Length: 114
Image (cartoon, rainbow, N blue to C red; front, side, top):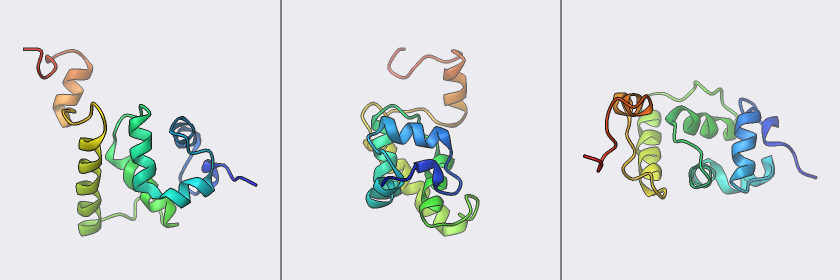
């Protein structure tokens, strides 16, 4: 019997839908492959990278509150997240921070368009 991804504390319908698009049908599969590999699959299936989503997934699979990630642990997860985003197809040149916001509203040219 399969359990919905959204049955895991702090993971709701949006994460469940992203997992389904990534070929992760249930909580059991998510737990089996782990947060890092699952997030990589989600990126490859079109999920936009967002660090908070990444560490929320990590905390959820550990049974911890979503905001329990701090200090060195958070820094280490950030490094893993950045490396994962760089590996994902079409994500190696992804904009971040203010550049991403400005690009989203069309204020700056995309890299390589200039």
